[in-house]
Length: 391
Image (cartoon, rainbow, N blue to C red):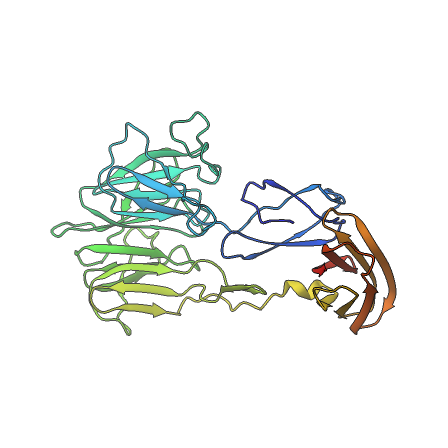
């Protein structure tokens, strides 16, 4: 049996042969999402007992900021791992208070987080894929955490440009101050710098920010009195405009945008809200805007590349005659192979020039030992597999 693997591509054994061009379908540990792997000429053919490396490209990470420490897990959606493995990322020597807010870069390599007045950056997370490379006390650790800025006011929010992880917005709270928006274009550098982007924004607390996926210049913020937006955060003195169409002037504590692009294919519900903006308010609910929505996805059916659209074996279990029903989408030659669970080829049949439509093939199992068998049908290099039981 072939199983979905972790991101590092641990090896597993096969229980039947795979040839160059065959498509191997396995499932991710995250919600059983389908993973499709085509055997390449570099890999060559696989025999029974050989191993295949399949990278699980569905990945997730979760960070939690607590008092004195920030913890990360790469298993927030993988419920096959119990207990969930968490790794601290703040080494000794860094005095971190109570965590206020945090934000990931879209590529997952950087995590920005803050306590009351200090801004921190954890980098190298793309290379830290296991407990050893995440271990801050190990020489093999790949992550680096450092304090990159300090402010005289409470840090209320962090926003990272989804296209450029070095572009970071920091929002500040407290009354009686002159600056509530800070911005950096070099936050991933050795010595980041921030500058005020207060512009014409009234002097009141700002709680949250968002950089538009379409345009890095456009920033939307949530304030004590509703939401505001600028079309050019790069300006030395940005112009901020109240966003009052359909939204009351109440405190907006969180603004988020779906930055993952729309997609769809069989076996996966996909994403259909790319670019949608969500705003959480104090006491007035959650608001949604579609004004920056991304292009609609076209359903991509991975199975359309297969010649065989369906495969049935009946009766199953059987003790005499087994009937195989399959449907071809186009004219092709068909190879039917039957294996026992040791990988031994029990029967092989070549059917040439099979026309599109439903076909039936039957065979006698009187001479078969009791047990489970694997039937493989190959057409145009694509393989469909089913199991049946002889009793």
